[in-house]
Length: 444
Image 1 (cartoon, rainbow, N blue to C red):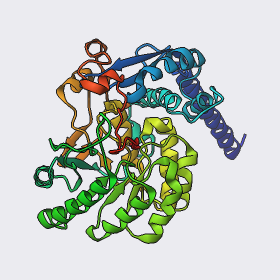
Image 2: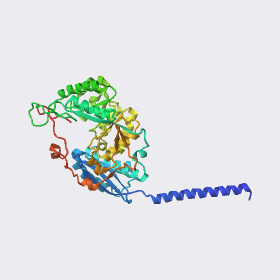
Image 3: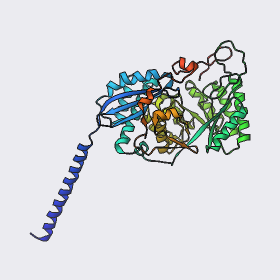
Image 4: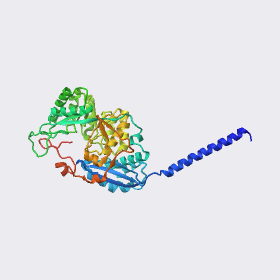
């Protein structure tokens, strides 16, 4: 046999040996890490500071492999719990926990009628828990599974409020001193139930016993607030304001025009979801940036606003849309249309939900801003690994998954209803009523 032929045979044998070795390695890896199956789905319902938080725990058939997801709909939390336990749990047991998007689609269609807040929050709890499991399997934080960081940390805004304008300005200066570059400012109207601010002790004539709100009084007060803020705080700080859907569509157009000269970072929720067609009129009239979406549940609400570039920031409560899986797609759509993200992030989002917000913030090129929340000690007692807020930035955990563990014994110390006061406790965490002087109900 000549030398050339011998070398060909040896080379072929080596190649065959390498292929065989690679195949054996794949087979061993497959045998060593079988796809986890969903063994159980549990709900952790807790209210460490009075706000009702719903966290879903998905447990797999692999020892020690589980995940947490936020499904918090604090105003109807008692309904999300059975939605998970009685409907999603039996639907999911035995299914493959690796197939996140497939399971999301299956859950979404499982009720036939869909896009309601209760079901969406239940789905979100499972969805985020599956992402947590995936991160724990990979030994990576979730943001790495989504493509890695576009930025080092997440820029946030603080909430400055007060019954009087000087109180708001002093509060805003406090946030600026702590490193915040963006501040939302809200001021009360004397004697009235303003959003995110005190009302003072002034008596207002009315024909009912409920809290009162008059849109025109609020509108005049808001313009005066921004005149004072720009004078006292200067032009460097970015100012935000939340209307909270409490005025009529034409009043919203006027307010956006009146505030244009103060160069807001954004004006939040000037219209209710029922009035989204009016965003075209705001866009035609002024350049005030608009954020919208806190109350959205359905793609039929956010799709036209993003597609037609009628808003500047999409501000969905992630669990209301169904979790991380749909919201990463919303962010991608926004990037194509020049719309930035500003996910809802108050105290009635669990630390798990905040971690999901931050993961989305880090990986989305079109990130805009993130609402911040300073986790109280009672919340940290229940949730270890809460996101870190420093100098006006959120920093993601580098631990696998969300980097959060839930102390279930501590959670049981704070059942729904604990720590709440007054009307919200009587209404199981729900909103009360606000009316005009004559008794007309106000959207909020």
